[in-house]
Length: 154
Length: 391
Image (cartoon, rainbow over all chains, first blue to last red; front, side):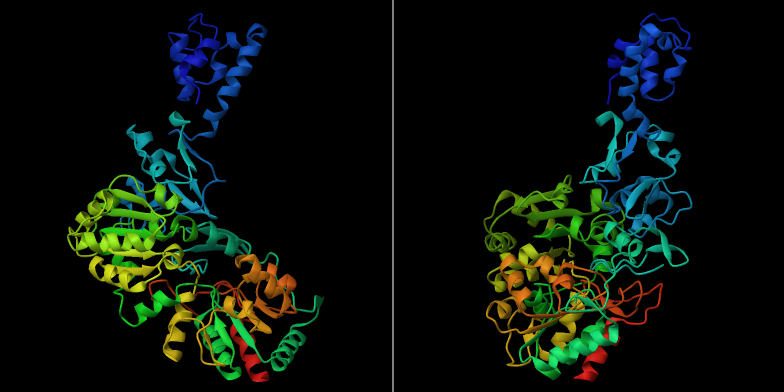
């Protein structure tokens, strides 16, 4: 994953405030957390910054694949064991008889569900990382095939 | 809700969405299970005699003719079919004095379980009560993907409400750092060993209060905290054990043992064989001896083999596979396989759990009724019955 400093180095560094942020550095931070879009930086779209813009777009490709919590699922590596579904603290709390006991998740709005043999992220807004900004890594820790990863670790 | 017959977990919580004859979505099943349902109609076997397409009646007639003309028949496979079909196959073997064997190597250990010499339990009890869970010589994460998440380490049970982090202790014993071993993190131990027998003796010594390595002593300390501890032994353990007496002593002191055999219905085969012959291993009804299919094939004691729902050419070692090509082969299989490519007679059948029902036995000995979604004209039971009648 690109660091904010890597992105800052490629930005115009004029602190023009056109994007609504006070500094270019804070804009770089928000690009990674996806609170701002690259289009908000108007000077970057002028011809003189074209090369730098392309470099930033390349860097941000990883960020785009991730969900809002930074969770990235690589379906090619997933074998559908369902460890992540069973260990997810939200699932255990909401559905103790189903997902908490190892049976397929019965919730109407699950966060993770095994479909067609691979895990899918369905309702990411219910994840503890999204709501309370807790640093929970239960699903990633119990995935030995590394199909689940978080952006900050990539 | 259907039952997945992909491995011996026999998960009964799988949901399948259909669009006419096509399976659109499979929920909760692992990759092995999902592909059985999603691709059930792909690369199906066709009735064949000597590599030429024919109809199913012709193929069955030819199979009967081949079996009648041979003196040393073997029946092999049977792991992916139902208890009912296994029963008929064993009847057939008894009638013609054939050798019967399945692909699983657990015969010796399962026999001790069925004789009540090794204490065993069910997976539901493991979920509710087990504290120390040992995976010995098996990579269940790959062979039975949902084993840990559905029955053993991860789910919360009646007496194990606090989950895997506090209420379970995982031990993985293997020759290499497998995917299952990678899950041994907090409250867990991974032991890398090349000598299972030595480790079993070390465990016995530690359980008796004797000397042992630091890891083993740590595990034994945890074992003493709970009354319910369980060992799952895989094929690595079965092949690594030279003397079973030590292992029996170890399990009696440790807790319970459940075979982690991925062959879907091998436990069913062992159970029927034990009822009929008093032994759970491969058996030759012709000369009342215990001999495995591989050994008989290598010694040239087989001239025709009837393979039911298995692909031995894919799984056997090269030397044995080469011998298999030289004998007459009759394959009853729903799908095309390496073995069906070289077979003299191919009889297409139905996929157990998708197109035909019946009973299967889970690795811990619990019977599970299959719930098929489709109906099929020919299944293993009907085909084997016709062959039986023809003989």
